[in-house]
Image 1 (tube, rainbow, N blue to C red):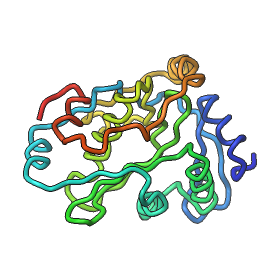
Image 2 (spheres, rainbow, N blue to C red):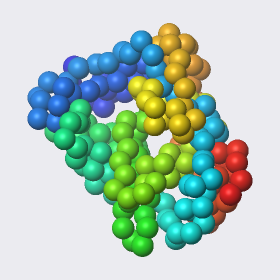
Image 3 (cartoon, rainbow, N blue to C red):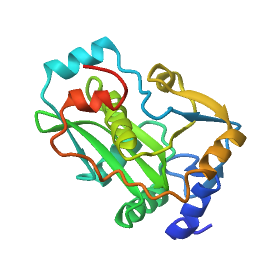
Length: 212
């Protein structure tokens, strides 16, 4: 499989599989088809009272695709990471072609959290996220879901179910059920880029079906 050719890679996502490397220094890339798939139902990110207090108390800003490569680098900057150089280059090309997006969280002009993923029709495949300060990745999830809900996405794929994602509203379904859901999304035409620039955090949270 040519992981620099976006058409090959996107076909993999359309078939319900995603690429990973054994480690960030590995040269080999392989496709993953897990038995259980993590998703977050659209509009259902859980926002705790402590996170709402944090939002009210801090001048948090959010952007889309202003520093995509930096977000991917920070997601890969861990002791153990599945994002190697080949995958980094693949994501960069998909971003340039309009298929990969980063959601960035800023506090006092400092990047404190982010998330990136791939769009396939009305499905958003979340690849990875990072947090360098309190609540950075949680806020990225909240903003991502607001954009998905606003633009009528049907599926937020988080790949593997984890306890952290479960605490944020995630759940697990079988890979077979996931692939059936995916089939209903791949022919849609949705974009994360459509979103009012003047939306307040109160409006962002309302798109997660909660109030600030």
